[in-house]
Image 1 (cartoon, rainbow, N blue to C red):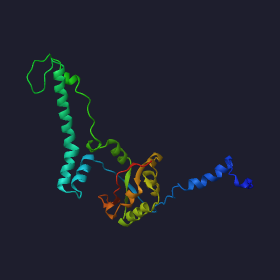
Image 2: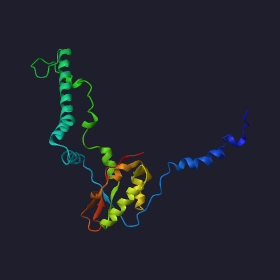
Image 3: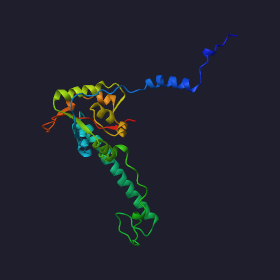
Image 4: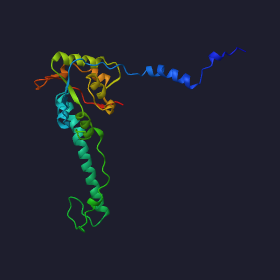
Length: 226
């Protein structure tokens, strides 16, 4: 039988666990946050669900036929389905409750509108047919600002810092730390995926009407990342 050495048996002591913890944590540790050396200012983000939806629909590479199909499928068809269902339920109520009148037909009514009492459970709209404005999303994106700069070069330098942050996500909190600015730590739960940041091209640097801070990085919409 082979001899078992005590050194070969893994220790179960708390001290050994604590010693191993830093190595395990190091694999998921966030990189050091680089700080931009120049000055920045925050520009209020504008939200507008309807106009954002319009731009997405008509300023894209899709053909008019594809746009028309999406409008029909997401806006018109769900509404027609609900109207047809409600009409069918109202007619069924008219047959069940003899005193009630059937919509569209003349009849004697007992004065009670059973369609108001019960019109059947309302089928919720599918997710894609919900209103273009999402209050929660808009509220999140109103809570922080786009970074603004005095020169176009400074804006591109900061954009390079954002892209060089080698971590799966970039939070709003980290974005502010890069500018040496403070924002509540709860904003670490909102931000962007690394793919979204890497997809930002030179066109995201916009010239705005602020005479002192005329260059702004137009950030995409933030979302929950944690």
